[in-house]
Image (cartoon, rainbow, N blue to C red):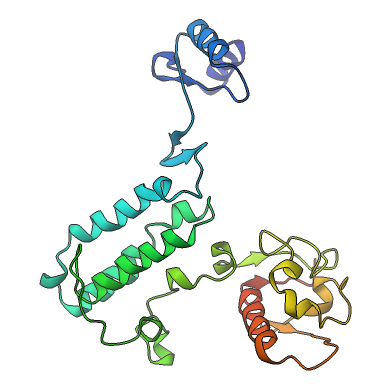
Length: 256
């Protein structure tokens, strides 16, 4: 309480204990209750909601993603797909629905079941369906979301085709990469690349190679310098394509 008092004097703000909750991590509930009575506040319990996010909840469970799914579905219920033109649905899906779950996605790994649900809602609304009413999909969804140049409608990334990690859809800055091992270190995903691209790493001529030895920057683009022990074919070639797609999000600054 003395520390909080110092904060009040320094910041000019005041803590309202009547509206505050005290949480304990690894502490008996009775002790937390006693301390809360000293502060004159309530005892909080996990899971809790802070800034719209569930704290202390198991985010592997579909039930804890219900707020995101409900928000998705509620936004669509506010718009009647049958009364909006095709162009209107295209704009709504592209500009609004793509951004709704990003707040959650930036903090938590998304279970596949949640991704499938959100993508189904988005796809159904685009074709004119709503709620439990489905409409015929006249074109494959993979073709619809492609960029304009590839004959698609430029709907951005497909929620259900994110790849290794959703965060890899964003640009990363890793410096010159001279102190980062390409396959061994955790630097672009939540695990080493050798655990994600298991077939591909078997063909690597130098498993301890650094990022700077495999990636270079030329004209603002990432250039790859691969050294395989044999030709990359079959499923391994598919892994290479996925790896290069993942690496395309990087920004390499060789001058630092």
